[in-house]
Image 1 (cartoon, one colour):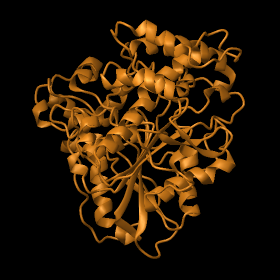
Image 2 (cartoon, one colour):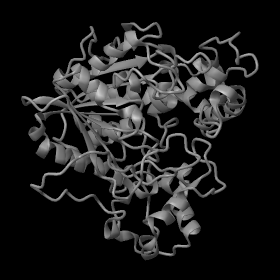
Image 3 (tube, one colour):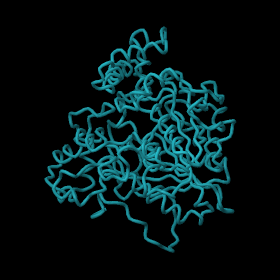
Image 4 (tube, one colour):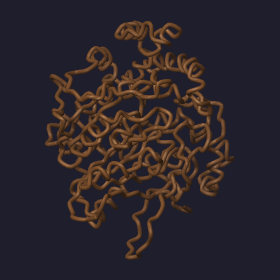
Length: 498
């Protein structure tokens, strides 16, 4: 994009031209190899497009749902098949669904403060978030032409998409662009302080790999040069065991003059988005997702034992690493390991406490941050409603059922997609319409229905999407883990971005 690389997005040029929108726009530039979530579509730096789905354009004032895809802020694209809007909009006539692309990895989140000429690129640490804000501005100005209501917009996203939603809840440039928000397995804790950018060394590796000495050199790189750099092995293992430059993916920058406050939770409690309705939750077994990611080039159905063998030390080591130098971490982990008993399960005998270690990672990275977000939203005392969920319906594939209710397993249910993930099995048909209708009901009215009551910090009512395909309300699920670990999270001993 010439001079616009690593710059804030620009508004689309106004036009009265009639054109055919017959295909999706390209995904953002990303690694095409060695990454489990990479988009298989065409890739380009000219990626800032959106996709709009609706059954018809009759009437007006339709609720608008805007989806932000996941992928660790490093991979993926809005047009990837799991995000197809055809099933959801076919089942709900009075709905407009929009999905947006945004820049990822080092083209969307990178720090140039120590690079010669870097002062000309002050937004480089959160460009992907700015991209979504620009898309929301376009939607607010134009969605009425498609029958949508610009004053009834719900943003929702999963993983990095949920993290982006969390960023938008506390970003002043996003104020007034949406009325409701759904955060699936991600919130504003999926951000980095400047110290984490420096520790991640992504900028240094980019300079070393490309031979660039300053920003002029970086701007002169071709897209192909950047693609090649992303796929270069750095020798340093990233957060998901990937040593490519793309595997050292950064998250949006918080603090340090970013549009994202240094403490997003404090911003929520102080009233950011206090009048926005939010729905937030996680899957029950988030970190089992990474079993399948241990060998990205192998079929998990044929190599599951090998993958679990590699997964065990990874998940065990990370359980200790997240507690850092906390002096009592050994005792705390011993206490946590007692909470659930998996004795007799196929892999538990060979790998002691494997699922407990996975649960500890799930609590630290996803469930406790979700609870914290809900608590601070309530503390603001605004008009916005708060709803909490826990998704317990697991993988339906018989071979991979040990992955349980892993990260991203709920996406086909949300999109009412009967096909689901090819390798994880088709969704439970009984649960499919219940989940998708809850999301659409919330977007339309602020009430998800199905007897779902608002969250509070006394009884903590939570909607359970059960493993048996049913819905039920439960007070304070997994309370023992919350009580044990939340003090650590609140004291920032245990937090994703630290």
